[in-house]
Length: 201
Image (cartoon, rainbow, N blue to C red; front, side):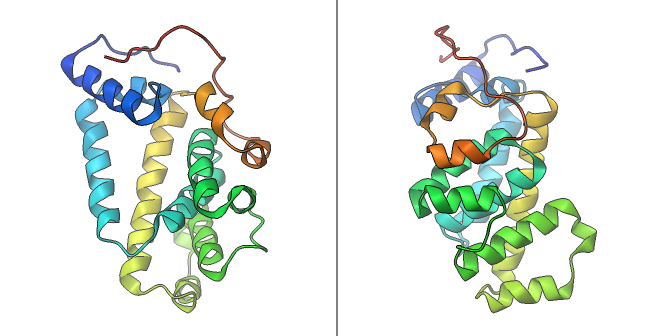
């Protein structure tokens, strides 16, 4: 990435350890966010506050992130959430969302993916008809708000990582299904594989 990781502290060690415990390695993005662990944890808490009481399923959240990240050209989140969506819906569906090939998707998944791309591309260009399409797919107005807020959160998170040149982890890239890896042809290149241990508290 374009900035150095901060010197070790109790706060940075805490988020490094959390990353290692969750993923088996310290994600590259964690080293950037280690400059402000409080903001990183605050973002995670706010996201959890939004999603924990939402009717959006894990699969639907993964559809939103994959569509959002791909529209932004964010390879990191496309790979990470492409793996999640592969687990929830199969690698073919994950690859379809990332590549904007929605023909084989179900009504709800397709509606969310289309909405996410429109919000990312031009939030001032959305129309009442776009929202009505979400209602027709079975989403109520509360859930439409939640989906839109979640898209905005993901845009903010991806923007920080991408602008600072944070490269997707090679460990992550090696773990995603081939169908997903093949369609993530945009954004930052995957970090070079190394055996150098990352800071892990």
